[in-house]
Amino acid sequence: MQITSLGHSSLLIETGGKRLLVDPYISGNDKVDGKIDIKDLKPDYILVTHAHQDHTLDVEEIEKMSKAIVVSNFEITTYYENKGLKAHPMNHGGSWKFDFGTLKYVNAIHTSSFADGTYGGQPGGFILSSEGKHIYIAGDTALTMDMKLIPMSFQLDLAVLPIGDNFTMGVDDAILASNFVECPKILGYHYDTFGYIVIDHKESVQKFSKHGKELILLEIGGSLIV
Image 1 (tube, helix red, strand yellow):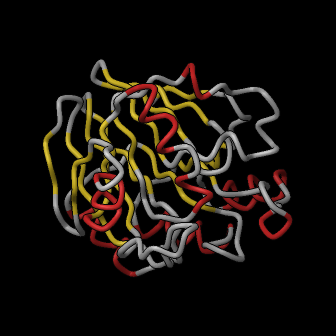
Image 2: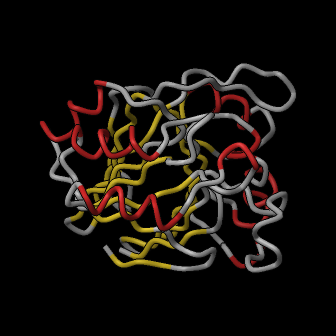
C-alpha cells in the first residue's frame, strides 16, 4: 500500500489495484506550487472526511475527469449526488466492503459545512483495511476518547493524524491520540498550510521520538509504503 502526500490533508492511496484520493485540496493550496496536477491523479474513489473547503475544493473537478465514486457521510454524498456525481453514503460506525478493501467510518470532533453554507453532516474519519494492513485516517478532529475504541477491533499499521493545532489536535494531543489508538507510527498532516497551523518540524519529530514513536512528515509529492 503506497500513500502519497498531496499537501495539507490530501492523500493519494494506492491499494488493492485502486487509487483512493482523500480530501482533495490541491488547486487552491499555495504550498503545492505546481508539484501536483489534479489531471494526473485519476482516482477510483474520493474519500471525504468533512465538508470544509480545505478538504473538498477539488472534489467536483476531479470527479468530472475521473468519474470517481465519492465516499463520505450521507449529507455530503447527497450534496454531491444532487450535482450529478456518483457517491457511496456512509455514517458513523458503519463499514462497507469495496473492491479495494473495507472502510469503516468513525467519529471525529470538528465542524462541517460547505463553502456555500450547506450543512455537511457530522465529520468523521476512516479505518482503511486493505492488503492485510489497517490505516486510521483521522480527518480533522480534536483528541477524543472514542479513539480508544479503535484498537479493540483493529491493530493499526499507521495512524494519519492532524498535528497543526488551532483548528485540530496539536502535536501534544496527537501523541496522546497515538497512545489511544495504540499505534506508534504516525503520518502527520493538516499543518503548515496556513499561518494558524505552522509547526516546528524538528521539535515535533523529537517530541514523538521521546515517547518512543515515529512521526513522519512527508514533502508534497513524497510517498511511504505501509
